Image: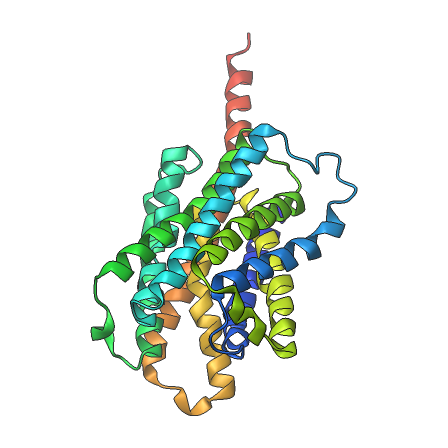
Length: 318
């Protein structure tokens, strides 16, 4: 139980780091190539993680592990590539609304991969959290819900969301089948370094490298900060939680990201506080509390099951 509590607490920290990272992104110089910056950011994150894996016995993955890490890297490249492509063709509201589908997609993919059990209660909790996150997105857009539409940008970003949901599913499947290391730092390092290479390839193909010349010292410091904390630490927290929790449970903490951003907004601009933030906030917090309660019940039942079977076996003995 203690390991499970640490995993949930780690994902709470994950949501706080991601939610508070958006202002840092907004401070960067406009016009810089986003995919190349993401590649650099992932490389910085992998470099920051590397001291944790130098003494690991299985620091070099075997062929099966390398194949799976490539698939995980492709899922990262697919999400970020879709996000950057769609950002010029759709609205922020549309993207934030579509992103709430990630936990549900993770559950469905997890069911197909055999790493999620049938759980109607979990699906209900995911729906509550999704509605709450959509409510926060609506409040953040000043109630302009008519900005949401379905076009090529929305379709591509939805496919990117599916790629994002696939990442923890592949991680969980690899752990269950012994293809990946049990060391969370190793899994973080290899997925980041391969993801950096693949996203960098996309950036070199689609973006002008000459724009990198506009990067300033402040930009470099921000990229380093985002790489170490918003990528390195958060990916490690995700991998650490994936070993204990299911993919849908891990990704459901993305509902808290707009809530963390909202708290920062209230701190910097208290005049923007209003009733429109309340419904979404209540639903998001309720979904996380229900998720913790649901997971706690599952853990207790799994602990009690062997004890009951042992008791039956004792009764059947002559």
